[in-house]
Length: 512
Image 1 (cartoon, rainbow, N blue to C red):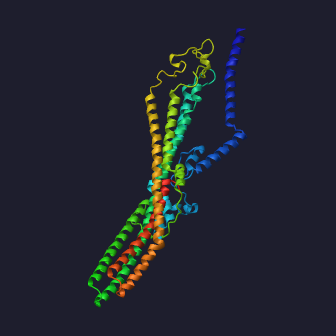
Image 2: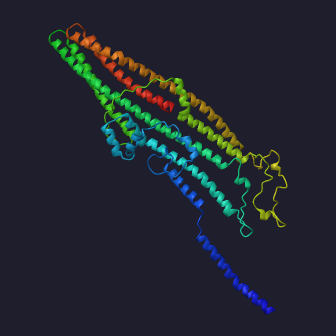
């Protein structure tokens, strides 16, 4: 009997490893040959396609050119940033000039061949260093979305798979409390809202950088247009003075006038020659501003601007206030800063203030250690701690950050007052810019409609009268001076109309 018992034991000991190895081999083969279901495969393929499309449509205001961006803005957040940009170039023109964003030679050829306002705006939009710096800062802030999600995911994985495992006792259950897996409200969501407002701040900084650079480009363009027109008018004035000088010389040689008339004409001629030289030097300075805005080499040649009339209907100022309230970047930044502080306060209060329940019915997933006669802990709370009484915080250290919260609340109140100040400032800037636009438009119409024509008529009459000896020299030189002043003023008002239009657009933060 004992021999039979030993034989059975030996047989079991020899057969058990073989069966175990055979089972493991079968399991390994099943794992190697596993194929997911058709439903999962179709879902995985669709997800990959969606991810590829999302990567191709990277936040379009962050980096229109340059290296790809790794950070992604959640789809539901993109509408907060992509609505109503300050500058919307013509798509076809943008595609045509896009290579000039990195090709300085091509950009220089465009500006050297012909200078028009649309090309200058686009090249400034694509090449301005301040705009590129703001784009990089925006791109960096977008990365915060991935940091928040990835950091929380890493911590959750560490807690679930490493720290809280109880290997060797029953199934592999996690010891993570329910209150950390389902917080109310979710701290991660609040972090995302804070980052959303931070990205919104950086986006409006980018819009402000674009707005400032484009306004500078428009201002220098209209100043350059005036400069070229002023040079032509001054050159015409010099021609008229030379003709008048010849008339005065003939009259002086004939004894019909004194030599002081000839001297006075020569003095004015020398003054206008120097003014013409000053205008030419000023043109070089204006070209240097264009070179700075478009980030080109200092020796770049800038073509003469295409003269055009800056015409725009004078809008109702009350409508401009409403437009600025929706689109102005300073107001958007102030509101984003307020929302960010509100979310930060809510997040801090969520983490340290008492919740809606005493958490007496919540328990950790540690059934092995909380059941049976060998339980090391009770499955439910059987006592109420002093710090967890009705209406009391969960932690005895509640209030240790109360001073920080009070400070943040005061900062929030100050931010709301700053918003009111910004609203008043925006309205004041709009009023001033609107006044300049209205004044420039009225004066342009006045000078172009009547004063310039009357000055030309007075100059012709006085010149003919001086040749015949019927008009005194003082009246003649006064008519020449008035002709020059009125023509320059007319061109100046044309340029001021374009500049005022650009400054009003800047004050509103959106084209009107």
